Amino acid sequence: MANFTKFLGAALGWSFGGPIGALLGYVIGNSIDGFTKRDIQDFRQQAQDHDNETHSGDFEISLLILSSFVIKADGKIDQRELDFVRAYFLKMYGKERANHAFRLFRGIIKNNDVSVRQISLQIRQQMQHASRLQLMHYLFALAKADEIITPDELSMLHKISGYLSINAYDFESIKAMFYENAESAYKILEIEKSATDKEIKAAYRKMVKKHHPDKVKHLGDEHLKGAEEKFLKIQEAYEKIKKERGL
Image (tube, rainbow, N blue to C red; front, side, top):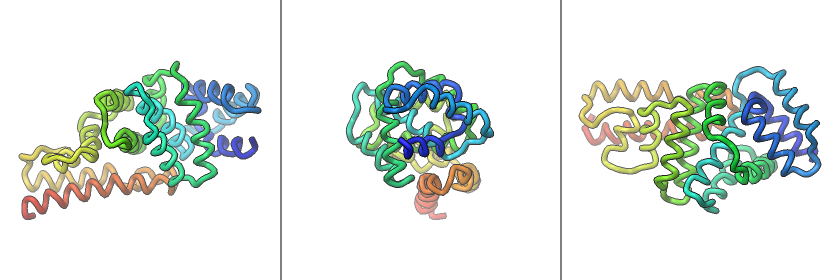
């Protein structure tokens, strides 16, 4: 129990307030042996004393909850998607923290009375745009964990992105990173195939600025790798177009 309490303390931030806090309180109170309502109230009080900046723990909690919506979108819980969540947290945080996160996640995914809109709106209000883009990249990777993104999963991803105030261009750009076709590289750079060479170079510079890993360094070193993977996709798209055009 002491280790799990320490884990929650590391996750303490704005995510312990609002609808996310209500969900966490319910899950912890009903799923974690030894936790009392008083414990949850103490955590929420401590959260109120924190600043409103997004920290690693807030991003982590947001990942867990939004992952549950995507996994359940097609009406079934695929083991490959659960394994993806566990593997991601293991890679990001190490074994002990990953085990605690997945313990919490099992309680979250069983809860069917939570609103994706309310959860997403809280995240939108508190989380910077670059961090929200990183969330969407992760969610697409999760949906693709079982090799195919189903129409129901894609619909849920589109719904979440709308609530997170991620525009259509950014959504299609991230989506194209997981769909290989003749126009994927152009979509990743948020341009049409008819764009001029000058427009392509300008688009690349814009995307580099928008998705640079430094934009999410406030989340901690553990999240830089995910941001770097997304950044690499942008660079690969640009190199592919340059090669195609002989630039």
